Amino acid sequence: MPFVPEWAPNVHPLIIHFPIALLFTAALFDTIGMILKKLPFWKNAATVLYISGTLAAVLALLTGEAAGDSVFLPTAANALLTEHSDLAHYVVYFFGAFSVLRITFFLLKLEDKMMFRSILYIIGLGGLVLLWSTADHGARMVFEYGVGVQAVDNTGVHVPAVSDSTQSSAPAHNSEGGLTWKPTRASAWHDAVTFYGDESGFMSSMRDGAERGDVLALSAQGNPIMFTFDRPMTTMQLDGALNLDDFEGTVMFVHHVIDNNNYHFTSISKIAMKQGRSENGDLYLMDDKPYAPTGWSSYRVVADQTHFRAYADQKLIVHGHGDDPGSGKVGLRLNGKGTVLLDFVQTVSLRGEGMGETAMEMDH
Picture 1: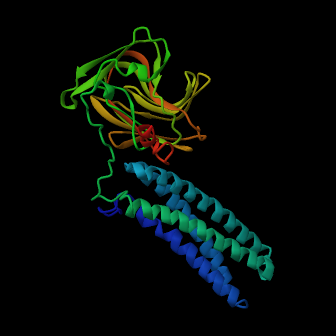
Picture 2 (picture 1 turned 60 degrees about the vertical axis):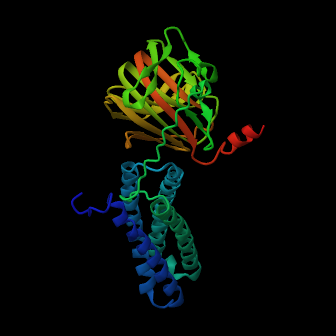
Picture 3 (picture 1 turned 90 degrees about the horizontal axis):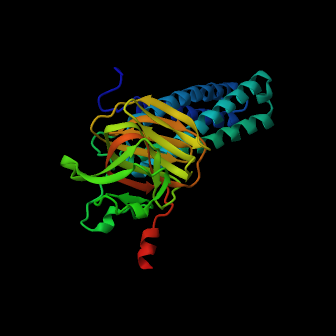
């Protein structure tokens, strides 16, 4: 946008101060009006400021959603973004209803009665607590995690180190409450996952992935095949690297898997990326965007309560919303024919579920 300075990643940082200033000033004017009861200017000005602040909050919400979709977040900031977005919606809903209430009281001249005026005053102060919490979450994203700050590296993608042991070929629990899988053997990992579907025609082998070293080649002959890792997850971030050049069909990062017919997914083909869920075998889409991968691409899938985001090469492609899926396993599903190259898959818990279990397992 032409009026956004070069240092600003988007317009949201320039907008967000207006609802904060307007709504806090409205509360200040309301306080003065409670003291100077015979001067209607203060309570009337407070009403105008609350309405203006609400409109500014709507604009801040819209620009904030666009801003959240334009940045690639560090892992630790994903849950904070979800909370910040939810709180921003609550602020708009609260002050929208409050503004309607104030207008109604003004038209009915109920503001002239001290009891109704006091009720409005207390409700307005309560809304400031919600506004403050929303602003605090936004400030933490910038100053604690560097979101949107150009000088800070926010990639947060750490490719698992390769070990020479056969054990490393199987998915391993990590200290972040998830799993790390960097295959080094063609089939040593098979016993560590659960397969769903027809395995006939499914094969795996190791291939030279050039600068990525040895990578796993997953070959399918058209029969849908899905496998999941053993650790259930609630809120999670999945990172992985795939090459789909020699595959015709769709590859799904599946999560919150219950069984072969019930799961959430981010599907990748040569023409689109889709996000949704399978419910008793019926597919329901949350988002669908054109997408054409070539060569190796790095992917990130985030599932955090009712928020679902998927990135390719650090750019957001799909962003859907739905019911909180609860807990379930994570894995891959191949629907098509050909070979998918896989470098690694890594999952982490966004809200601490399962963290520390690896250490306890080692103690036992």
